[in-house]
Structure formats: C-alpha cells, structure tokens
Picture 1 (cartoon, helix red, strand yellow):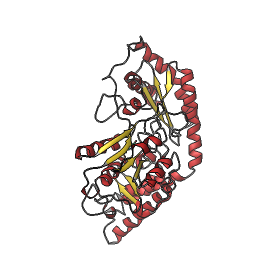
Picture 2 (picture 1 turned 135 degrees about the vertical axis):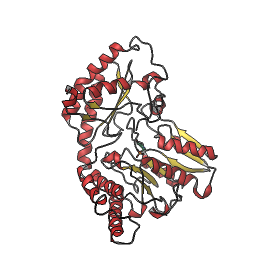
Picture 3 (picture 1 turned 90 degrees about the vertical axis):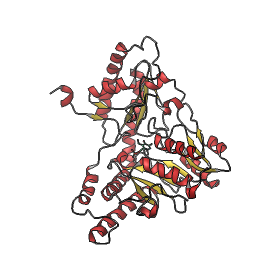
Picture 4 (picture 1 turned 180 degrees about the vertical axis):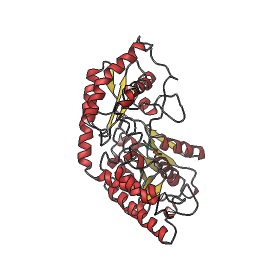
Length: 405
Ligand code: PLP
C-alpha cells in the first residue's frame, strides 16, 4: 500500500458537495425500510410518509423564516433554479419580457436564461467589480417596464463573494418585480431570512449542507405568480409533479435543522481557518493572489490564483498529498473554456486557468489547514519547475477547464 493511501485524507471541496451527516442518514433510514409509503397514499404507510414530509417542510421553513406552505421540494439546486427562472418568466404562456441577472451566476441560472432568450425574452447580465461584487445601483438602472424577474445569487460558488441581497430585494419589491436568489452555497455559512431580505424565490440543494444528493428546495413566497415546469400528478401543490422523494426531503429537513444549530460557532471556526489561508498563501507562495473580495465572502471559501501554472496540475498535486480541492474544471461537459466567473472579474485567460478553490466544512480542523499551508509551496514550485509557462509564456486558451460546482 502506498503512503498516500494510508494518510488521512483531507476534504477541502465542500462547495462541490459535503458528507452526509450521521444524524441525517439516521433520520432518512426508516423511509427506505419500514416507512416506504407514497406520501400521496391515504393508508397508514402513506400517512406516515406524509407526516415526515410535512415535518421536514417545517424544519426548512424555520431555517429560512418562511411558512411551510411556501416550501417546494425539488430534485436539487439546478431544478429549483430552472423552476424559478422559467416558471416565473413564462407564467401563463408569456414569451416576451426582460430578465435581470448577473455575469457570475451558476450555469443552473445562466442556461435557463439562454432558454428564455430562444423564446423571445431579453436578458441583462450585470457585470461585477474586480473583487466579484454586484452593484445594486447597476441593477436598478437596468430595470425596464417589461422586467419580469431579477435573479442574483446570494453567494458565489467559485469565489464565495456575498452579494447585497437585502438591498437588491428591497429595490425589487419597491418596483413589484419578483426577486429570486440562488442560495445553494449560502446555507449553513450565513443566516438566511427570506422575509427580512425581501426574497420572493430562493433555491437550496441538500448535498451542499450535509444532506443527500438529488433533493432540493425552492422557496416560493405566497402570492408569487409561477407555473410548473414539470407537470403530472400535481404533487407539491401542483408546482412539482412526481412522487415525492420522502427520504430525501427528510434528510434535507434534518440537514437544514443542523445547519441552523450553532451557526455562529461554525461560521467563526471556518472563518478563522479561511482568513489564515487568505493571509498566509500570498506570503508563502511567490506570485500568488487571492480571487474575490477579502471579507465579503463566504466563511468557508478561499480562492487563489498562481501565476505560470494550471489549476488542474495543482489539484492533482495536492490530491497526491491527500488534500481534495478544486479548480475551474472537472465539468461534466468537458469544456475547455476558463471559468466565466474568473473572466467576469477581468482576469486574462491564463490567469483564470491558474486558480484553486479551497472550500472548508464545519468539520475541518486547524491541523488540516496547517498541513495544506505546509505542502502547498512545494507543490506549486514543483509544478513551476516543469511548467513551460514559467518562462513567461502565457497559458493559452484551450488548456484548462471550466464549470465549478
Ligand atoms: N447553484 C449553485 C450556486 C451551485 O453551486 C450549484 C451546484 O454546484 C447549483 C446551483 C446546482 O445544484 P445541484 O447540484 O443540486 O443541482
């Protein structure tokens, strides 16, 4: 057995996915075994499932300061985003109108917006500052008489920047424009309050906060005009047909409850490690830089770029040392374009290719952060030794990847 196989592995890729919490697994287990009823059935098996489903709905509502009737279970963040964008913009068969979003949204927002464009909608993508922040004034200026929806993510999945959601929500409300936010990366790393933040629609995904994969939520404020994108048996108040994934919903509910426990304490711990990394890496690795705002970012997100090397090499070099991180790559589409988020910051292609994302979880320790800081300079310099780019020749387009989860 190789040394790398015996060493404890360190997981610093919590924005890609997280470990299912043991409490979540325990809560889900009965719904695969003895309580396997369909939550729409009227017999005791069905009623048992229905009770658990409604209990999960209450737990999610509590964390968001929403009403349980405003929670719609979906298959994940991507479906929630699709439902919000298409379901609101295309309400009652509309095929025209204007949507405002940002240049740094996840593809789960950008692609549904492209879909709308094919039907005749117009979409404005608001740019961001070099540190990744959206200016609410620029959003306000983009509003038109025919604006039917605004969608601005709460926190970015690559660089972690947190947007001024409350201000944007207030402005949207004053103009009676529905406001959606993709909060997939935010839950468990900052408080979310749909009422205080004037949010009409909000997307979540269980696997990003220690719940199972393949289940998500769309919060839909009462009175929001929206229609389903998946039609059938009329489950989830007609907004999301298909037999409900009861075990998944129960897991999501439990994970949401856990995310609310000691939120301050968990945030403080992750922030301390994040800040240590943000401060130390540029000191110990020559020609390295932080991507994104230094403070207005998720407590668990550190994103760097290293001149003259590619992120993929770095991820593999760190993996060899037992540390899991990510870069603007590993996309299922195998795209070779650099990350649209890093390009939106104004970075050149070659700079965007040399990025590394480190995303912490509530279980990571100081020792793990120290080990990362200990091995990183060696991995970078080894890559630079063999890099054809350290001579100053830039990395050209077509070398590297895109699509960070
Ligand atoms: N939105 C953001 C910001 C994300 O980071 C992700 C996942 O990476 C998604 C949406 C999609 O979520 P899911 O994997 O549950 O479809």
